[in-house]
Structures are given as C-alpha cells and as structure tokens.
Image 1 (spheres, rainbow, N blue to C red):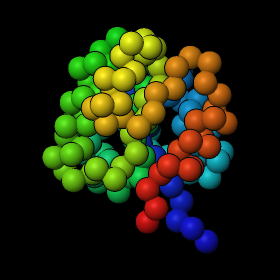
Image 2 (cartoon, rainbow, N blue to C red):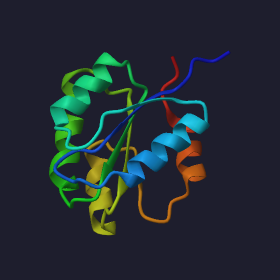
Image 3 (cartoon, rainbow, N blue to C red):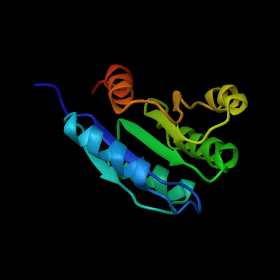
Image 4 (cartoon, rainbow, N blue to C red):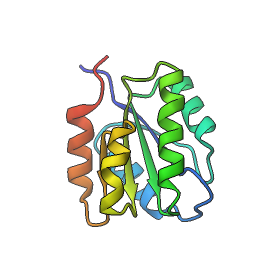
Length: 132
C-alpha cells in the first residue's frame, strides 16, 4: 500500500476566518490523506517549520485577508531555504486573477478560487503530491 499523503493546512497572517480551511482539511481526511491543521494566524516561519517537522508532502494555504502577495512568496522563499522544493504548495481563497501568475512564478503550484470543488482540489493534490 502506498504511503498516505501528508498535508499541512495553514492559515497564514492575521485572517481570523477558517471555515474554508476546515472544510478542505475534512475533505483531505475523507480522501485518506493525513492532515495536520496548524490553526489560525500562522507566520510563514511557523508554517515552514511545521512542514519540515511533519515531513509534509503538501502545504495547503488558505488566504482570505488580501496578504497573499506578501505571505505566499515569503513561505516559498523559506521552503526553498529549507530544501523543501519537492513539497507541493497550493493556495485557496480570495485571490484576484491578476495575482495568480505572480504567485505561480513564486512557486505556488496551484490556486483554488471560490467555487473550486473539494473533489477538484483533492484530485489535484493526489495527482501532484510528491511520491515517497
């Protein structure tokens, strides 16, 4: 049997709304993934540290605060510094279309905007997570 996909679900920054993060964490669990939810108001350093300590295959970020253009590149910079280049990083939340190319250039693998189905997100992660 294949090893379970280990996913960190995190809420970076000062955003206090985590319903979407909890919904996706539950969808990942229901899909058989091992999920570590770090909770609200995580710094980029805390998120990357959790990914390192938990040997995560995937980091899923939920951003509704509008700070994605600051937080996501910082997280990717720290992931690279810690040699976590093979960890898939995806973002969900309120991300304007014009910001998506810049986030992908920073290393974010995929962006899921409002309306994305949990099935679509689970399938993407299952098909793109690093293989151990």
